[in-house]
Image (tube, rainbow, N blue to C red):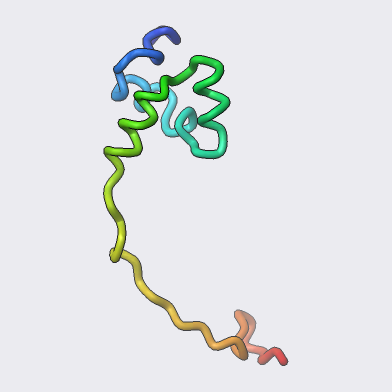
Length: 73
């Protein structure tokens, strides 16, 4: 895949070739500025993300417990 094809609408090709690295929220602004990914592709990626709200397990932690079994004060 050529680099210029990444700038188009081919999200599937983008993800297959480069993974999520171009769309990582820590560097996506820089990648958009460099022309490596378009703002439209990034916005579509965000819109296509699954809603994970409520799919997590809630864990309670006792501050007196530690991983090594020794209580902390």
